[in-house]
Length: 213
Image 1 (cartoon, rainbow, N blue to C red):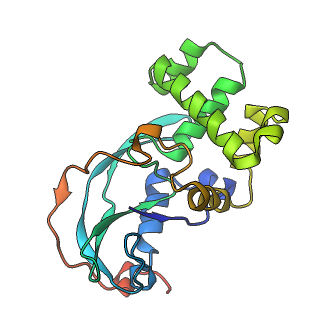
Image 2: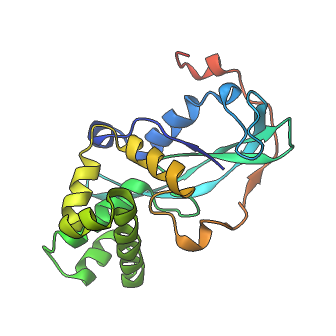
């Protein structure tokens, strides 16, 4: 996969839906300047269709379900194909990064019961506890064991979501550990194959997206 880190921040979260953030990141991706994640060759990627995946997000107090289509790219050097995943997406999960962080913030605020949090967000209690465990593990990886002991999970979440650029932290985490923040452990090395593949098709040139390159 190709992880694309943009400029997520509180202002972006406040003003755009996760689907809009995904689409903006997809349209702004300069594939012709990128290197292949497999062989490292530059300027060898070309559009190679895409696949559909569900996206569960949270905006203005409501659960929003949509379908997005991450594009795929083929490397002319080694022949491998790679899906583009902007940082609003969690690899191999239908839940957006914003959704997970919102759920965990509600849990650690301790203003209501675990059952009420899960009912509000439509998730199982076991899912919440697995996210909690993952957050605490990744929190330690980000700020170190000693600092992690000092800083509460809620303070960490508020610091992360209030950062000037959340993407900087996500990029640093990915490059240091070779898997994504909040990615499920069982998919960090070997993930399930993508489904609902779209047949390869030519993509429009970058200027057709209406973006300034």
